[in-house]
Amino acid sequence: MDIANIKKQALNFNRSRSNLLVMIAFTLINVALILVDSDMFFLFSATIPYYIAGFGAVFADELGNSAWLIGGGAVALFGILLYFLCWLLSKRARAWILVALILFLIDSAFLVFLVVFLAEGFDAFFLIDIAFQVWILFYLFIGTRAWAQLRKATPEELNAALEGISTDEEQSNNQAASNVLQDGNRYERLDDPPQEDRDEPEDRY
Image 1 (cartoon, rainbow, N blue to C red):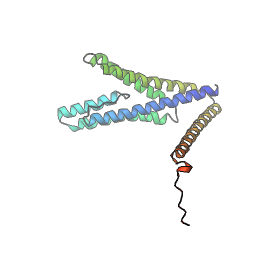
Image 2: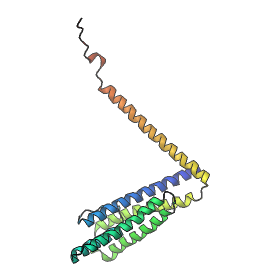
Image 3: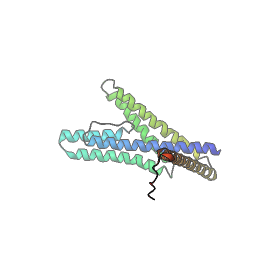
Image 4: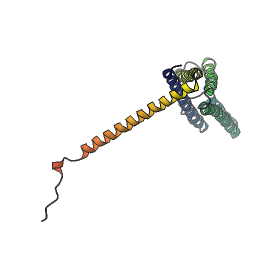
Protein backbone atom coordinates (compact mmCIF):
# COMPACT_ATOMS: atom_id res chain seq x y z
CA MET A 1 0.00 0.00 0.00
CA ASP A 2 1.59 3.27 -1.11
CA ILE A 3 2.24 6.12 1.32
CA ALA A 4 0.09 8.62 -0.60
CA ASN A 5 -2.98 6.39 -0.32
CA ILE A 6 -2.34 5.80 3.38
CA LYS A 7 -2.16 9.58 3.91
CA LYS A 8 -5.43 10.02 2.04
CA GLN A 9 -7.22 7.37 4.10
CA ALA A 10 -5.81 8.74 7.36
CA LEU A 11 -7.11 12.22 6.48
CA ASN A 12 -10.52 10.77 5.55
CA PHE A 13 -10.64 9.00 8.90
CA ASN A 14 -9.81 12.22 10.76
CA ARG A 15 -12.51 14.10 8.82
CA SER A 16 -15.00 11.38 9.75
CA ARG A 17 -14.16 11.73 13.45
CA SER A 18 -14.44 15.53 13.23
CA ASN A 19 -17.94 15.33 11.71
CA LEU A 20 -18.93 12.80 14.37
CA LEU A 21 -17.81 15.18 17.12
CA VAL A 22 -19.75 18.10 15.61
CA MET A 23 -22.87 15.92 15.43
CA ILE A 24 -22.44 14.96 19.09
CA ALA A 25 -22.14 18.62 20.10
CA PHE A 26 -25.27 19.69 18.22
CA THR A 27 -27.24 16.72 19.57
CA LEU A 28 -26.26 17.66 23.11
CA ILE A 29 -27.33 21.26 22.51
CA ASN A 30 -30.69 20.14 21.06
CA VAL A 31 -31.40 17.85 24.00
CA ALA A 32 -30.58 20.65 26.44
CA LEU A 33 -32.85 23.05 24.53
CA ILE A 34 -35.86 20.74 24.53
CA LEU A 35 -35.41 19.97 28.23
CA VAL A 36 -35.69 23.69 29.01
CA ASP A 37 -38.78 23.93 26.78
CA SER A 38 -37.12 25.88 23.97
CA ASP A 39 -38.44 25.88 20.40
CA MET A 40 -34.95 26.17 18.91
CA PHE A 41 -33.48 23.23 17.03
CA PHE A 42 -30.14 22.76 15.28
CA LEU A 43 -29.63 20.47 12.32
CA PHE A 44 -26.67 18.11 12.01
CA SER A 45 -27.70 16.09 15.05
CA ALA A 46 -28.97 12.65 15.98
CA THR A 47 -32.74 12.12 16.00
CA ILE A 48 -33.39 9.43 18.62
CA PRO A 49 -31.84 11.20 21.65
CA TYR A 50 -33.74 14.38 20.76
CA TYR A 51 -37.11 12.63 20.52
CA ILE A 52 -36.53 10.61 23.69
CA ALA A 53 -35.87 13.85 25.58
CA GLY A 54 -38.90 15.39 23.85
CA PHE A 55 -41.20 12.53 24.87
CA GLY A 56 -39.96 12.84 28.45
CA ALA A 57 -40.69 16.58 28.43
CA VAL A 58 -44.20 16.05 27.00
CA PHE A 59 -45.15 13.34 29.50
CA ALA A 60 -43.73 15.41 32.37
CA ASP A 61 -45.93 18.31 31.30
CA GLU A 62 -49.05 16.21 30.74
CA LEU A 63 -48.76 14.13 33.90
CA GLY A 64 -47.22 16.80 36.10
CA ASN A 65 -44.40 14.47 37.05
CA SER A 66 -40.84 15.72 36.59
CA ALA A 67 -39.52 12.16 36.80
CA TRP A 68 -40.44 11.76 33.12
CA LEU A 69 -38.33 14.80 32.25
CA ILE A 70 -35.37 13.51 34.24
CA GLY A 71 -35.72 10.00 32.84
CA GLY A 72 -36.03 11.19 29.25
CA GLY A 73 -33.03 13.44 29.64
CA ALA A 74 -30.96 10.65 31.21
CA VAL A 75 -31.76 8.19 28.40
CA ALA A 76 -31.02 10.85 25.78
CA LEU A 77 -27.68 11.64 27.42
CA PHE A 78 -26.86 7.94 27.49
CA GLY A 79 -27.41 7.79 23.73
CA ILE A 80 -25.13 10.80 23.23
CA LEU A 81 -22.54 9.15 25.50
CA LEU A 82 -22.49 6.11 23.20
CA TYR A 83 -21.58 8.33 20.26
CA PHE A 84 -18.98 10.15 22.34
CA LEU A 85 -17.38 6.85 23.36
CA CYS A 86 -17.23 5.87 19.69
CA TRP A 87 -15.46 9.13 18.90
CA LEU A 88 -13.09 8.86 21.85
CA LEU A 89 -12.18 5.20 21.42
CA SER A 90 -11.82 5.42 17.65
CA LYS A 91 -8.62 7.43 18.13
CA ARG A 92 -6.89 4.28 19.38
CA ALA A 93 -9.12 1.52 17.99
CA ARG A 94 -10.41 2.66 14.60
CA ALA A 95 -13.08 -0.06 14.48
CA TRP A 96 -15.24 2.11 16.75
CA ILE A 97 -16.03 4.32 13.77
CA LEU A 98 -17.96 1.33 12.39
CA VAL A 99 -19.97 1.18 15.63
CA ALA A 100 -20.79 4.87 15.22
CA LEU A 101 -21.92 4.21 11.65
CA ILE A 102 -24.24 1.39 12.78
CA LEU A 103 -25.73 3.56 15.54
CA PHE A 104 -26.35 6.42 13.14
CA LEU A 105 -27.88 4.10 10.54
CA ILE A 106 -30.42 3.08 13.19
CA ASP A 107 -30.98 6.75 13.99
CA SER A 108 -31.51 7.59 10.31
CA ALA A 109 -33.93 4.69 9.90
CA PHE A 110 -35.94 6.10 12.82
CA LEU A 111 -36.04 9.52 11.12
CA VAL A 112 -37.28 7.97 7.87
CA PHE A 113 -39.94 6.09 9.85
CA LEU A 114 -41.10 9.37 11.38
CA VAL A 115 -41.30 11.07 8.00
CA VAL A 116 -43.09 8.23 6.22
CA PHE A 117 -45.52 6.99 8.88
CA LEU A 118 -45.95 9.65 11.54
CA ALA A 119 -45.54 13.01 9.82
CA GLU A 120 -48.78 14.88 9.20
CA GLY A 121 -48.45 16.08 5.62
CA PHE A 122 -45.39 17.26 3.75
CA ASP A 123 -42.84 19.28 5.67
CA ALA A 124 -39.77 20.59 3.85
CA PHE A 125 -37.89 20.71 7.16
CA PHE A 126 -37.77 16.92 7.23
CA LEU A 127 -36.09 16.90 3.83
CA ILE A 128 -33.43 19.29 5.11
CA ASP A 129 -32.96 17.16 8.20
CA ILE A 130 -32.59 14.03 6.06
CA ALA A 131 -30.04 15.82 3.87
CA PHE A 132 -27.89 16.52 6.94
CA GLN A 133 -28.33 12.92 8.08
CA VAL A 134 -27.03 11.76 4.70
CA TRP A 135 -24.06 14.12 5.08
CA ILE A 136 -23.14 12.57 8.44
CA LEU A 137 -23.67 9.05 7.10
CA PHE A 138 -21.40 9.82 4.16
CA TYR A 139 -18.53 10.89 6.39
CA LEU A 140 -19.04 7.96 8.75
CA PHE A 141 -19.01 5.67 5.73
CA ILE A 142 -15.76 7.08 4.33
CA GLY A 143 -14.31 6.86 7.84
CA THR A 144 -15.26 3.18 8.02
CA ARG A 145 -13.86 2.62 4.54
CA ALA A 146 -10.65 4.37 5.55
CA TRP A 147 -10.39 2.11 8.61
CA ALA A 148 -10.76 -0.96 6.38
CA GLN A 149 -8.08 0.35 4.01
CA LEU A 150 -5.67 1.28 6.81
CA ARG A 151 -5.87 -2.26 8.17
CA LYS A 152 -4.00 -3.38 5.03
CA ALA A 153 -1.03 -1.13 5.77
CA THR A 154 1.97 -2.40 7.69
CA PRO A 155 2.94 -0.59 10.91
CA GLU A 156 6.04 0.80 9.17
CA GLU A 157 3.98 2.21 6.27
CA LEU A 158 1.40 3.65 8.64
CA ASN A 159 4.00 5.35 10.84
CA ALA A 160 5.76 6.81 7.81
CA ALA A 161 2.49 8.17 6.44
CA LEU A 162 1.44 9.66 9.78
CA GLU A 163 4.84 11.31 10.18
CA GLY A 164 4.41 12.75 6.70
CA ILE A 165 1.01 14.18 7.65
CA SER A 166 2.49 15.73 10.80
CA THR A 167 5.34 17.22 8.79
CA ASP A 168 2.94 18.66 6.21
CA GLU A 169 0.77 20.19 8.93
CA GLU A 170 3.83 21.64 10.69
CA GLN A 171 5.07 23.18 7.45
CA SER A 172 1.61 24.60 6.76
CA ASN A 173 1.42 26.10 10.27
CA ASN A 174 4.95 27.55 9.96
CA GLN A 175 4.09 29.11 6.61
CA ALA A 176 0.90 30.62 8.06
CA ALA A 177 2.84 32.04 11.01
CA SER A 178 5.46 33.45 8.64
CA ASN A 179 2.74 35.14 6.57
CA VAL A 180 1.24 36.68 9.69
CA LEU A 181 4.61 38.03 10.79
CA GLN A 182 5.30 39.45 7.34
CA ASP A 183 1.88 41.12 7.28
CA GLY A 184 2.47 42.54 10.76
CA ASN A 185 5.83 43.96 9.77
CA ARG A 186 4.34 45.51 6.65
CA TYR A 187 1.56 47.13 8.66
CA GLU A 188 4.08 48.48 11.17
CA ARG A 189 6.05 50.08 8.37
CA LEU A 190 2.86 51.58 6.96
CA ASP A 191 1.93 52.99 10.38
CA ASP A 192 5.33 54.59 10.94
CA PRO A 193 5.47 58.20 9.73
CA PRO A 194 8.00 59.03 7.05
CA GLN A 195 11.40 60.00 8.33
CA GLU A 196 11.13 63.56 7.07
CA ASP A 197 7.74 64.07 8.75
CA ARG A 198 8.92 63.20 12.21
CA ASP A 199 9.38 66.10 14.59
CA GLU A 200 13.02 66.91 15.12
CA PRO A 201 14.04 67.79 18.69
CA GLU A 202 14.61 71.47 19.21
CA ASP A 203 18.19 72.57 19.47
CA ARG A 204 18.28 74.51 22.75
CA TYR A 205 21.93 75.30 22.60
